[in-house]
Image 1: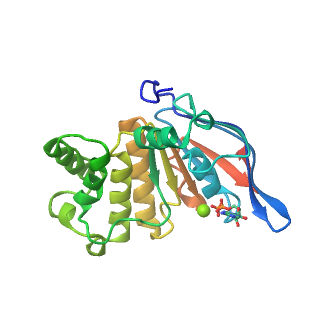
Image 2: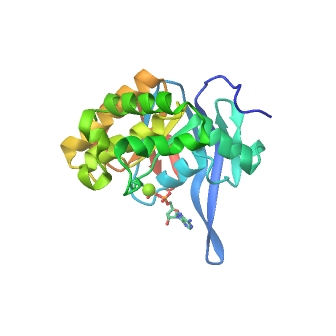
Length: 232
Ligand code: ADP
Ligand code: MG
């Protein structure tokens, strides 16, 4: 099966259950989860620490295989793919922004994006232009693009993470607690940015957060509680 020809239909999880080993028994981290996110839709999943938010994103990102249920990325059933095909699917269709900024300390902002290019094979000049445009679109213009992570604020680092996640033109954008290291104002700006990115790039975006104050800019809010996902 090729993963490159599928049209963009976004993300769909159905009947997804995930357990982890827990001593003699198993801990249910995701309990029969249903979730569909269309292209251009910005969905928030809120819930307390430990309710399963990061597990949900790991399954949606095809980094973890669920015990039961299906994960469709642009209609492609990730469970039916081998590891190599799943890696290709991630590279071609998924953008992931993790909770912890995982920028490389020695690289400038623009290089954080270009480092991915070795696996994609665009022409260097075209790749650099695209990296610069993306950074500009998230509010990092000119000399800031040549700064290394320690020379950027927390909010600016998060912007680099978001630009990097967009570099491969993903259909699905998965974002884990993007504001947890930011003050309220900077956090609100990052959520605003994600709303804009969802519109302009047409991504099916899922942001998980425990911060209920930042949900005004999303299209839909879902509640997660003990691994169960419900509409609010
Ligand atoms: P959240 O992101 O909402 O804080 P997580 O998805 O990280 O929640 O965790 C959900 C539950 O699964 C928690 O009880 C957590 O301790 C447990 N858990 C998460 N990852 C693992 C793992 N790799 N092994 C065992 N238990 C885990
Ligand atoms: Mg988490």
